Length: 201
Image (cartoon, rainbow, N blue to C red; front, side, top):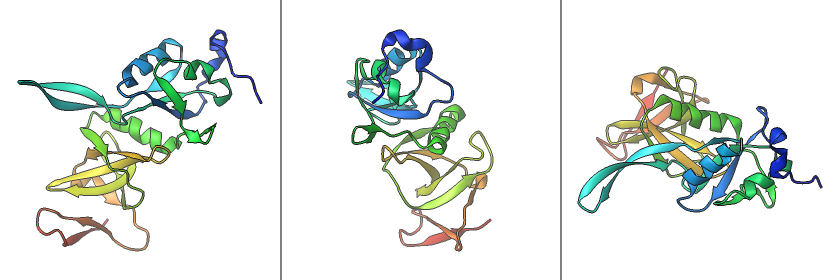
């Protein structure tokens, strides 16, 4: 079993080709952990969204984690001790005691979402659904699952390892379905809960 690195090994802890892992962190410690990891030289990623919360008699905009309780970090799993000893970090997400990297395409989609500046919110995790490709705009090339909420269309992006999802509002004209032998259906909740419209190329 390889020895875990100490903080004195910082010059070899972070490599640009290292995989991304999800860190399970204590509640409301996401930002603190993110800053601490950055100060140690790690490449970290904490996707946030803007939420309007009521504080006593006033409304205030606050930035909250898109994946509450998690921070993403690029690291080599055999040299994870400095990460695990970071205040607020509980564990590295994996199978049993073996850390499992995040699917690169899923993380890249979340990074594209954050860079786009489009409004997004946490969303119930979806494993199956209508897959679409965003063809235009800041998130062109990203695939996700389509969902209709009233008059808005949202594309749901998921991180399978965490079984968590986020949703971003997308203009109907910028997406096309990824077909697998049949049309993709979108539930139109503004007219009839049971009525469906087909999206075609």
